[in-house]
Image (cartoon, rainbow, N blue to C red; front, side, top):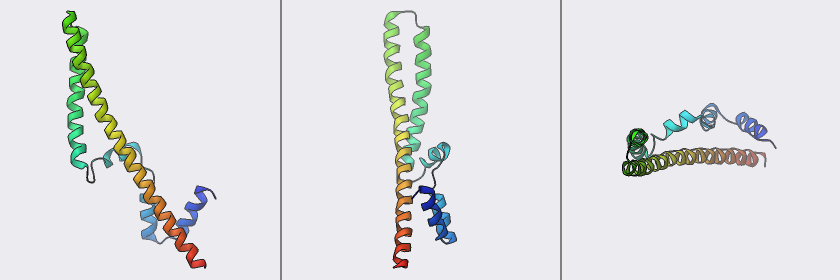
Length: 128
């Protein structure tokens, strides 16, 4: 049985409230997923890491510019090291955000599967 057939079967057996809940569990776009980071239990951490990430991004551009305009080799090594460390830190914070978005997506799909199983098991038990 195809996914579309299962979805159609489920939608036929739902009342309006259940159908709305089922459609709310559909896959979200990138910006909606990003906005979802700022809700739930980790909202404070997401806001804090976003602020830190913005600071690191500005610092990365600043030290990158300083690196490319430096004239002495000692200064190049110092600025290059600072640039590299801040760039890696900003990248790791970005990775944390993407991992949270992925986790939220997986949880949404698990809820959708639980809902499908509940509806189909109810339909099967009604037929018996």
